[in-house]
Length: 556
Picture (cartoon, one colour):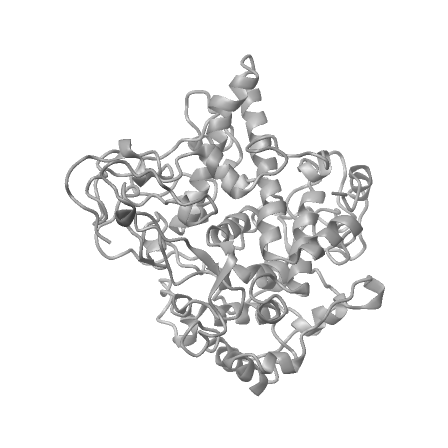
């Protein structure tokens, strides 16, 4: 891989200002560099990837909702959608975990009035896992074990059952650390909004701890605790960055586009010229449109583990301490009993979410039939969202919303309009300009109109000709990417932003050591399944030592 901007050149550019650029994003530049005259260092802002596209869509709520209500997985669209057998379902929630690492917009998705220039990103735009590490042991001591402060605290599951398997009577180290009210003690509270992201967060805590307690001491037994923590953190972050670039991205975008960006450089995400301090920022075209592809990947239900092999999407929220709504606001208290930690029959079976093979060892008291194994794929990348995402729970203390305010597709479409995003066609034409050196097939109005009930609804309002960017990215994936990967516009936005975030980070592997290869797992490559294998504990419910031999049988 070849970086677009060499570290030395990038360092020089960071000491230059771009006339008329946005305020610095994320943090103050290091050293004695002062802001340009008339500017002050401010918290990071979201920016524009295509600042010259100045004609936003002007659409009313009725028009947007008419399109949104057709963007649903139902009998009418069943022949157009389905599973994406190239992407296991775990990557849906890995994508959400990554999003929480690089963006934190405190405005609600349903907020009507948006002061666009004032929208701040309270997360550093770097793939550095500050959502996991916080500010480190000195700044976030509540995350770390008091014995040395070099390991994360791991929470325990409640012994007993939540109507799943009464034999799970032992406390298991398979929950996030929590206080007595069940609030997770983690670097980003959003990572406890749903159970799958929470269990991914837990896997990264255990990844770090295993490096600290086993891998690094075996390699360097005399290393001090402080040094061991720093080495472990860098190894965790670099392997995570490798996963983002070479596993996650390569599964969901056009690999030729990614390779073109790595080889020939970024054409549109030029933070060196677009931001006041030549630092990366998060483009609205990315955060409000292209990267919301994950909503299309969500399934209506999941095969979670042996005890709960048919669960609805809504249960992922009820079994999290934050019990959050997907809007990013807190949901009302769940009905029924609450728990200070996760019940012992609810830890995830990772075999069902990532390519880890089918488990064969259940212990003498569990049969393959009782295990009820089923693999979860992500949904196809298309405009048809699971029905559950069309009926979000209300977010108190807001008044009872009208029907459209329950609809995530509508809220996403309206968010794009409120943020002044250009149309998908405007972005595609801008990318396809001869001066960019890029050429690809663009969606035609006829293709949009002729592909499903949503296309017909779009055409009735002229949206097949000037299409909201988020919907365009999903439609492009459906038609040009066959539902398996994003099309050229979506792929280009994601590739340039993720590569740019790594190239703009002085401490990333792509900047510091672009020829670096993973040292863990099988070596030279490292995927999310490799990380989970390294951590171990893939299926706590099927580990024979984790349950009582009582005769009670699981229920589903």
